[in-house]
Amino acid sequence: MMRFLLKRFVGVLPVLFFLPLITFVVMHFVPGNYFDSLRLNPQISPETIARYEAMYHLDQPVLVQFFYWLKHICTLDFGYSFAYKQPVLDLLLSRLGNTFLLTGAAFLLAWLAAVPAGLLAAFYRDGFCDRLFRLVAYLGLAIPNFFLCLVLLYLASRWGPLPLGGMRSVGHADLSAVGKVWDIMRHMAIPVFVLSLSSFAYLFRLMRSQTLEVVSKDFVFYLRASRVSEAKILFKHIGRNAINPLVTLFGLELPALFSGAALVEIFTGWPGLGQVMLQAVRTQDLFLVLGNMVMIAVILVIGNLLADILLAVMDPRIRLGRTN
Image 1 (spheres, helix red, strand yellow):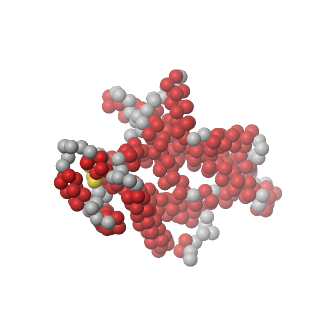
Image 2 (cartoon, helix red, strand yellow):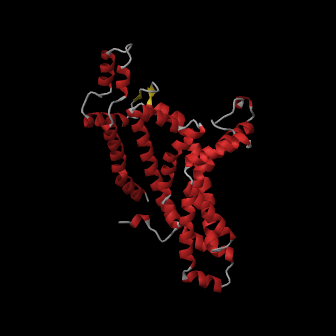
Image 3 (spheres, helix red, strand yellow):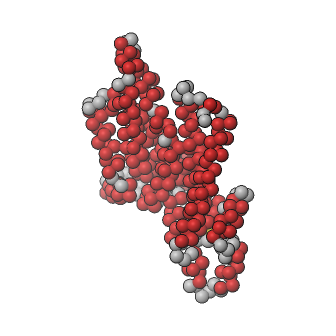
């Protein structure tokens, strides 16, 4: 297992290298940079700007800048955020927990709902549950996240008891421990629902199609002929075989949800990385954008490794140590 994990990690190292490199090059193709806005300020001298550019090697060619940055991140120095006036790593870590709380809850909710819904919808094909879940999935795929955010925020402002944005209420510090948890959960309700709905739609459709394929197998007929209970056939035998393709998507779903949460965070005022990255792109804060790309790449790598391990645990036919 350790040899397999090491082999997979070495295989994904190009992702950790080329994703920031492509981002670095694209950022330099965009006209202007952060210091162009500083040059418009008469209170900042050209010597000061030149000193900052030399300090962070921004006066060097693009590839030279990139390898200087790559050298620094080996010591966990992700650079300096010019827009926020603080180190990139400190800024990302201060918001990372909030984003993980939001995306983790949406990820868990989507999977817990999509897997049994896909099983039941395929097992009782064309029944009421199948039609209902398919309708929800179609709506999840058809409605853009930002539009659904606006609709839910409008409904909450008119009739709902849910807060309209942010992560905590004004009197959050005065609440009890249970009250603080409940207050954060109320603020999470709208963004988590929006994120989980689109993820649920994709996972449900895949789980349903895989279940329909497994249901037609000969072993299901044999189990029914052996008078095995329908619930045991569905959840133990059919579900175990149908869920394998979803497990392989685990490594892609989590970083995709993580990066897709940025727009939802902006619309709902959630204090995560979304607003930080919007400001970074608008001000062309190079090191902050690169730090976010590295974070997404690391999550992608970790997610794929976890997916391989889960797949081996759930399907004993797979032998990770013998993969070519």
